[in-house]
Length: 308
Image 1 (cartoon, rainbow, N blue to C red):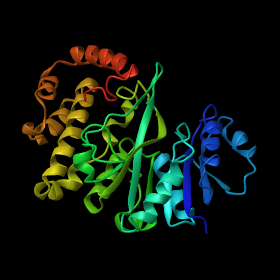
Image 2 (cartoon, rainbow, N blue to C red):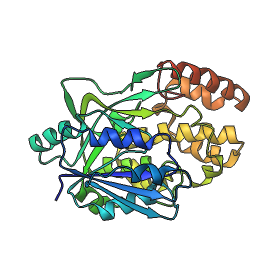
Image 3 (cartoon, one colour):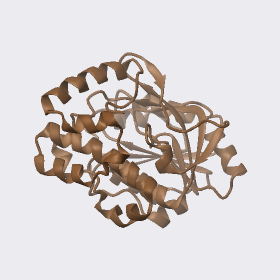
Image 4 (cartoon, rainbow, N blue to C red):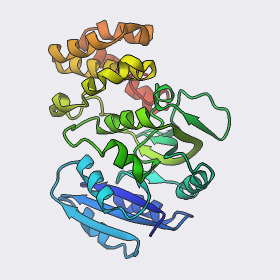
Protein backbone atom coordinates (compact mmCIF):
# COMPACT_ATOMS: atom_id res chain seq x y z
CA UNK A 1 0.00 0.00 0.00
CA UNK A 2 1.46 3.41 -0.95
CA UNK A 3 1.96 5.96 1.82
CA UNK A 4 0.21 8.83 -0.03
CA UNK A 5 -2.68 8.97 -2.47
CA UNK A 6 -2.47 12.06 -4.69
CA UNK A 7 -5.81 12.98 -6.29
CA UNK A 8 -6.01 15.19 -9.40
CA UNK A 9 -9.45 16.34 -10.60
CA UNK A 10 -9.00 16.98 -14.30
CA UNK A 11 -11.23 18.99 -16.58
CA UNK A 12 -9.89 20.63 -19.76
CA UNK A 13 -6.38 21.44 -18.53
CA UNK A 14 -4.42 20.40 -21.61
CA UNK A 15 -2.05 23.36 -21.25
CA UNK A 16 -1.15 22.56 -17.63
CA UNK A 17 -1.61 18.89 -16.75
CA UNK A 18 1.79 17.77 -18.10
CA UNK A 19 3.70 20.18 -15.85
CA UNK A 20 1.51 19.31 -12.87
CA UNK A 21 2.06 15.58 -13.34
CA UNK A 22 5.80 16.02 -13.76
CA UNK A 23 5.95 17.99 -10.50
CA UNK A 24 4.34 15.02 -8.73
CA UNK A 25 6.44 12.34 -10.36
CA UNK A 26 9.62 14.33 -9.55
CA UNK A 27 8.97 14.14 -5.80
CA UNK A 28 11.95 13.11 -3.69
CA UNK A 29 9.60 10.93 -1.64
CA UNK A 30 8.41 8.25 -4.06
CA UNK A 31 6.00 6.02 -2.12
CA UNK A 32 2.72 7.31 -3.53
CA UNK A 33 -0.03 6.65 -6.04
CA UNK A 34 -1.53 9.23 -8.39
CA UNK A 35 -5.28 9.07 -8.98
CA UNK A 36 -6.33 11.14 -11.99
CA UNK A 37 -10.09 11.65 -12.24
CA UNK A 38 -10.84 12.88 -15.75
CA UNK A 39 -14.11 14.72 -15.16
CA UNK A 40 -15.40 14.61 -18.71
CA UNK A 41 -12.65 16.63 -20.40
CA UNK A 42 -13.34 17.58 -24.00
CA UNK A 43 -9.84 18.80 -24.89
CA UNK A 44 -6.57 16.84 -25.25
CA UNK A 45 -6.08 16.30 -21.51
CA UNK A 46 -6.73 12.55 -21.73
CA UNK A 47 -4.23 12.12 -24.57
CA UNK A 48 -1.58 13.97 -22.59
CA UNK A 49 -1.93 11.84 -19.46
CA UNK A 50 -1.89 8.68 -21.60
CA UNK A 51 1.72 9.45 -22.50
CA UNK A 52 2.80 8.92 -18.89
CA UNK A 53 3.52 5.23 -18.27
CA UNK A 54 4.47 5.45 -14.59
CA UNK A 55 2.88 2.46 -12.79
CA UNK A 56 1.96 4.69 -9.85
CA UNK A 57 -0.62 6.49 -11.99
CA UNK A 58 -4.22 5.26 -11.93
CA UNK A 59 -6.56 7.08 -14.30
CA UNK A 60 -10.36 7.12 -14.23
CA UNK A 61 -12.86 8.83 -16.54
CA UNK A 62 -16.33 9.92 -15.49
CA UNK A 63 -19.14 12.18 -16.67
CA UNK A 64 -18.52 15.84 -15.82
CA UNK A 65 -20.08 16.67 -12.45
CA UNK A 66 -17.53 19.12 -11.06
CA UNK A 67 -14.28 19.18 -9.09
CA UNK A 68 -15.89 18.20 -5.78
CA UNK A 69 -17.44 15.09 -7.26
CA UNK A 70 -14.09 14.22 -8.88
CA UNK A 71 -12.24 14.63 -5.58
CA UNK A 72 -14.81 12.48 -3.79
CA UNK A 73 -14.42 9.82 -6.47
CA UNK A 74 -10.68 9.92 -5.90
CA UNK A 75 -11.13 9.54 -2.14
CA UNK A 76 -13.21 6.39 -2.76
CA UNK A 77 -10.45 4.93 -4.94
CA UNK A 78 -7.57 5.92 -2.63
CA UNK A 79 -5.53 3.04 -1.25
CA UNK A 80 -3.49 5.08 1.22
CA UNK A 81 -4.07 6.38 4.72
CA UNK A 82 -2.90 9.88 3.74
CA UNK A 83 -4.64 11.78 0.97
CA UNK A 84 -3.54 14.89 -0.88
CA UNK A 85 -5.12 16.86 -3.70
CA UNK A 86 -3.58 18.97 -6.42
CA UNK A 87 -5.47 20.90 -9.07
CA UNK A 88 -4.47 20.13 -12.64
CA UNK A 89 -2.89 23.55 -13.18
CA UNK A 90 -0.91 23.82 -9.93
CA UNK A 91 2.63 22.71 -9.09
CA UNK A 92 4.49 20.97 -6.27
CA UNK A 93 8.09 21.59 -5.36
CA UNK A 94 10.10 18.35 -5.26
CA UNK A 95 10.20 18.02 -1.47
CA UNK A 96 6.48 18.52 -0.77
CA UNK A 97 5.70 14.89 0.11
CA UNK A 98 9.05 14.40 1.83
CA UNK A 99 8.43 17.38 4.09
CA UNK A 100 4.91 16.26 4.98
CA UNK A 101 6.09 12.68 5.55
CA UNK A 102 8.59 13.97 8.09
CA UNK A 103 5.89 15.94 9.92
CA UNK A 104 3.55 12.94 9.96
CA UNK A 105 6.23 10.79 11.60
CA UNK A 106 7.05 13.51 14.11
CA UNK A 107 3.42 14.33 14.99
CA UNK A 108 1.44 11.08 14.67
CA UNK A 109 -1.60 12.55 16.47
CA UNK A 110 -2.07 15.36 13.92
CA UNK A 111 -4.49 14.55 11.10
CA UNK A 112 -4.24 17.67 8.88
CA UNK A 113 -0.99 19.01 7.40
CA UNK A 114 -0.44 22.00 5.15
CA UNK A 115 2.32 24.27 3.91
CA UNK A 116 2.83 27.77 2.56
CA UNK A 117 2.22 28.46 -1.10
CA UNK A 118 3.33 30.98 -3.64
CA UNK A 119 0.92 32.60 -6.07
CA UNK A 120 1.57 32.94 -9.78
CA UNK A 121 -0.11 35.86 -11.54
CA UNK A 122 0.23 37.12 -15.09
CA UNK A 123 2.92 39.55 -13.89
CA UNK A 124 4.98 37.75 -11.26
CA UNK A 125 5.12 35.04 -8.60
CA UNK A 126 5.10 35.94 -4.91
CA UNK A 127 4.57 34.27 -1.51
CA UNK A 128 1.07 34.18 -0.05
CA UNK A 129 0.45 36.48 2.93
CA UNK A 130 -0.72 34.75 6.10
CA UNK A 131 -2.20 36.06 9.34
CA UNK A 132 -0.14 33.69 11.49
CA UNK A 133 2.65 34.89 13.77
CA UNK A 134 5.79 32.97 12.83
CA UNK A 135 7.46 31.28 15.80
CA UNK A 136 9.45 28.55 14.05
CA UNK A 137 9.59 26.37 10.96
CA UNK A 138 6.00 25.27 11.52
CA UNK A 139 2.95 26.14 13.61
CA UNK A 140 0.09 24.06 14.97
CA UNK A 141 -2.85 26.39 14.45
CA UNK A 142 -6.58 26.88 14.79
CA UNK A 143 -7.82 27.01 11.22
CA UNK A 144 -10.14 29.98 11.74
CA UNK A 145 -7.72 32.33 13.50
CA UNK A 146 -4.94 31.36 11.09
CA UNK A 147 -6.99 32.02 7.94
CA UNK A 148 -8.18 35.62 8.24
CA UNK A 149 -5.93 36.50 5.28
CA UNK A 150 -4.86 33.57 3.11
CA UNK A 151 -6.36 30.21 4.04
CA UNK A 152 -3.80 27.93 5.67
CA UNK A 153 -5.35 24.95 3.87
CA UNK A 154 -4.81 25.31 0.15
CA UNK A 155 -6.41 22.47 -1.79
CA UNK A 156 -3.17 21.90 -3.70
CA UNK A 157 -0.88 22.04 -0.67
CA UNK A 158 -2.36 19.92 2.11
CA UNK A 159 -2.46 16.32 3.30
CA UNK A 160 -5.25 14.64 5.28
CA UNK A 161 -5.42 11.42 7.20
CA UNK A 162 -8.15 9.37 5.54
CA UNK A 163 -10.07 9.22 8.83
CA UNK A 164 -10.76 12.96 8.48
CA UNK A 165 -13.19 12.28 5.63
CA UNK A 166 -14.70 9.36 7.50
CA UNK A 167 -15.38 11.70 10.42
CA UNK A 168 -16.63 14.88 8.70
CA UNK A 169 -17.67 13.64 5.27
CA UNK A 170 -16.40 14.52 1.81
CA UNK A 171 -16.84 17.58 -0.44
CA UNK A 172 -20.40 18.90 -0.75
CA UNK A 173 -21.30 18.45 -4.41
CA UNK A 174 -24.39 20.67 -4.12
CA UNK A 175 -22.10 23.71 -3.74
CA UNK A 176 -20.83 24.92 -7.10
CA UNK A 177 -18.52 27.64 -5.75
CA UNK A 178 -16.91 27.61 -2.34
CA UNK A 179 -16.84 23.84 -1.80
CA UNK A 180 -13.33 24.10 -0.40
CA UNK A 181 -14.37 26.71 2.16
CA UNK A 182 -17.21 24.49 3.34
CA UNK A 183 -14.83 21.56 3.73
CA UNK A 184 -12.15 23.54 5.58
CA UNK A 185 -14.75 24.89 8.02
CA UNK A 186 -15.79 21.35 8.85
CA UNK A 187 -12.13 20.39 9.19
CA UNK A 188 -11.45 23.40 11.42
CA UNK A 189 -14.29 22.49 13.78
CA UNK A 190 -12.69 19.11 14.50
CA UNK A 191 -8.95 19.36 13.91
CA UNK A 192 -5.89 21.53 14.44
CA UNK A 193 -3.68 22.12 11.41
CA UNK A 194 0.08 21.69 11.27
CA UNK A 195 1.23 24.49 8.97
CA UNK A 196 4.76 24.50 7.56
CA UNK A 197 6.29 27.83 6.58
CA UNK A 198 8.33 26.32 3.76
CA UNK A 199 6.80 27.14 0.39
CA UNK A 200 6.03 23.78 -1.19
CA UNK A 201 3.47 24.53 -3.90
CA UNK A 202 2.53 27.12 -6.49
CA UNK A 203 -1.06 28.23 -7.04
CA UNK A 204 -2.07 29.88 -10.32
CA UNK A 205 -4.06 33.03 -9.48
CA UNK A 206 -7.14 33.76 -11.61
CA UNK A 207 -7.50 37.53 -11.81
CA UNK A 208 -11.13 37.16 -12.92
CA UNK A 209 -12.15 35.06 -9.93
CA UNK A 210 -14.43 37.72 -8.41
CA UNK A 211 -16.50 38.14 -11.53
CA UNK A 212 -16.59 34.62 -13.00
CA UNK A 213 -19.19 31.94 -12.38
CA UNK A 214 -22.04 34.41 -11.91
CA UNK A 215 -24.43 31.57 -12.67
CA UNK A 216 -23.24 29.89 -9.47
CA UNK A 217 -24.02 32.77 -7.11
CA UNK A 218 -27.15 31.04 -5.87
CA UNK A 219 -25.28 27.79 -5.18
CA UNK A 220 -22.39 29.10 -3.12
CA UNK A 221 -21.44 27.75 0.28
CA UNK A 222 -24.33 28.03 2.75
CA UNK A 223 -23.19 29.18 6.19
CA UNK A 224 -26.60 28.44 7.75
CA UNK A 225 -25.44 24.92 8.57
CA UNK A 226 -22.88 26.46 10.94
CA UNK A 227 -25.33 28.70 12.84
CA UNK A 228 -25.21 26.73 16.07
CA UNK A 229 -21.44 26.33 15.93
CA UNK A 230 -20.75 30.04 15.45
CA UNK A 231 -22.89 30.92 18.48
CA UNK A 232 -20.38 29.19 20.74
CA UNK A 233 -17.21 29.61 18.67
CA UNK A 234 -16.13 33.27 18.28
CA UNK A 235 -13.19 32.31 16.06
CA UNK A 236 -15.57 30.62 13.65
CA UNK A 237 -17.97 33.57 13.84
CA UNK A 238 -15.28 36.04 12.81
CA UNK A 239 -14.09 33.76 10.02
CA UNK A 240 -17.63 33.38 8.69
CA UNK A 241 -18.24 37.13 8.89
CA UNK A 242 -15.16 37.75 6.75
CA UNK A 243 -16.52 35.29 4.20
CA UNK A 244 -20.00 36.83 4.42
CA UNK A 245 -18.39 40.18 3.66
CA UNK A 246 -16.79 38.75 0.52
CA UNK A 247 -20.05 37.17 -0.62
CA UNK A 248 -22.05 40.32 0.15
CA UNK A 249 -19.72 42.28 -2.13
CA UNK A 250 -20.21 39.72 -4.92
CA UNK A 251 -23.99 39.84 -4.56
CA UNK A 252 -23.97 43.64 -4.65
CA UNK A 253 -21.90 43.55 -7.85
CA UNK A 254 -24.37 41.05 -9.32
CA UNK A 255 -27.31 43.27 -8.39
CA UNK A 256 -28.84 40.67 -6.07
CA UNK A 257 -30.18 42.89 -3.29
CA UNK A 258 -31.88 40.09 -1.38
CA UNK A 259 -28.79 37.91 -1.02
CA UNK A 260 -26.67 40.98 -0.28
CA UNK A 261 -28.98 41.91 2.60
CA UNK A 262 -29.09 38.31 3.85
CA UNK A 263 -25.32 38.16 4.19
CA UNK A 264 -24.86 41.75 5.35
CA UNK A 265 -27.45 41.39 8.13
CA UNK A 266 -25.72 38.25 9.44
CA UNK A 267 -22.39 40.04 9.93
CA UNK A 268 -21.35 41.22 13.38
CA UNK A 269 -19.72 44.44 12.22
CA UNK A 270 -17.17 44.52 15.04
CA UNK A 271 -15.53 41.58 13.26
CA UNK A 272 -14.76 43.75 10.23
CA UNK A 273 -12.08 46.38 9.77
CA UNK A 274 -13.26 49.92 9.04
CA UNK A 275 -12.22 49.55 5.38
CA UNK A 276 -14.52 46.58 4.92
CA UNK A 277 -17.44 48.36 6.60
CA UNK A 278 -17.02 51.24 4.16
CA UNK A 279 -16.82 48.91 1.15
CA UNK A 280 -20.14 47.36 2.07
CA UNK A 281 -21.79 50.77 1.85
CA UNK A 282 -20.33 51.78 -1.51
CA UNK A 283 -22.34 51.59 -4.75
CA UNK A 284 -21.44 48.81 -7.14
CA UNK A 285 -19.91 51.07 -9.82
CA UNK A 286 -17.29 52.30 -7.35
CA UNK A 287 -16.63 48.74 -6.17
CA UNK A 288 -15.89 47.69 -9.74
CA UNK A 289 -13.29 50.43 -10.08
CA UNK A 290 -11.68 49.36 -6.80
CA UNK A 291 -11.63 45.74 -7.94
CA UNK A 292 -9.84 46.74 -11.14
CA UNK A 293 -7.24 48.69 -9.14
CA UNK A 294 -6.73 45.96 -6.56
CA UNK A 295 -6.41 43.31 -9.26
CA UNK A 296 -3.53 45.27 -10.79
CA UNK A 297 -1.88 45.53 -7.36
CA UNK A 298 -2.45 41.84 -6.68
CA UNK A 299 -0.73 40.90 -9.92
CA UNK A 300 2.37 42.61 -8.59
CA UNK A 301 2.18 40.91 -5.21
CA UNK A 302 0.48 43.56 -3.09
CA UNK A 303 -2.05 41.26 -1.43
CA UNK A 304 -3.49 38.06 -2.86
CA UNK A 305 -7.16 38.88 -2.42
CA UNK A 306 -9.12 41.82 -3.70
CA UNK A 307 -10.51 43.07 -0.39
CA UNK A 308 -7.91 41.77 2.10
